[in-house]
Image (cartoon, rainbow, N blue to C red):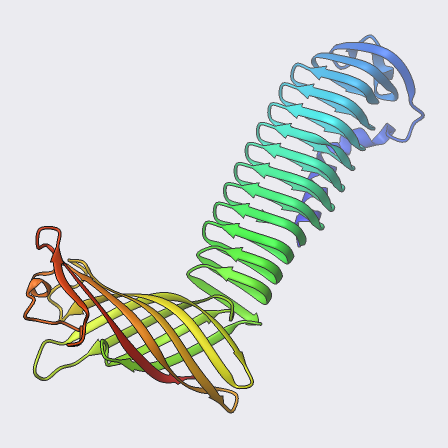
Amino acid sequence: MKTNTFCITLILCLLLPLGTSAQLLMKKRPAQITFVTPLSTNGVKAPRIINHLSVNVIGGINGGVEGTEVGGIFNIDKKHVEGLQIAGFVNVVGSYVTGLQIAGFANVVGGESHALQAAGFVNILGGRARGSQFAGFANLAGGKMTGLQAAGFFNAVGGNMKGSQISGFANMASNVSGFQFAGFANIAKKVNGGQVAGFINIAKRVKGVQIGVINIAKEMDGIPIGLLSFIQKGGIKQLDISTSEALKAQVALKMGVRRFYNIFAVGATVDDDGPDHYAFGYGMGTQWGVRGFISNLEIMTWNVNRGFENWFDEVSLLNQVKFTLGHTFGRHFTLYGGPVYNLMISSYDHALNLDDPGIAPEWAFTDKLVGGGRTRFQQWLGFTGGVRF
């Protein structure tokens, strides 16, 4: 992960002017007031004094705070802050922070944080964190973190994350024990918990769940839920070639894990005595087996088109629930079959003619028009069989 190096480099650049006297012996005083450094009650000695109460009318550079510090624009402390620090624009601390840190724009800490940080734009932390970070744009922590990160755009932890990350766009961390929630993407090495993203989740190892349009993992011990799931170890990639009374020829690609996988399929029925039907299908399924026998439970929805006449213009949906039982021969070949419940819902012109059965067989136990004769419902029990590679 590059996050740790990025955070530390940025923080060192911001704190470089403060580093020359950071190792000097610090004195403690009950209070100070600064108009703008060096116009201070502590004078030029302010960077070597730790105050219990620090008031910076515009902004001040001080040794540290053990109590409360308030700045109209900025607060800069060479060493630590223990307590409350509030600035209209930015807080900068050379060492560690405990307590509460609030800034209108940014909080920058060179060391550790055992605090709640809240900033209108960004929180930047060079060391590890135990607490929470809230920012309008981004939170960056160079070391490991225990707690919560919430940002409008981006969260990044250079080390391990124990807790949760919530962002409008993306989250990054090394190893995550908890959850990542992002509007677009989550990226981590190891995840023990879950990743939820509006578009893509990426991890090397996942123990838990991934929910997104695209899920990518090298190793999965859990469930990926989404449109496309690419799992290298512990996943399945299967090609099915099958037939049924509804669609005579079907080809399906199955991707995911055995507990939950996605199905992308095409099908067709070519009839010399009637119209041809073409279909595109999507579904989900689960698979289990023992000693060479494989069972699958799947749900599918097909958009069925009569030739090219109603190509997605009208409702023409074949909904199916399938249960199949198969036997595996060798390592990569399975022969299977099983019953299928079918529900056909259609509203294109030819489908509303009850004399035309469409793709439904003669034994359909429901075939009627509803909705003032504008929609046709057909139900029947069928069968499917095929081979899987």
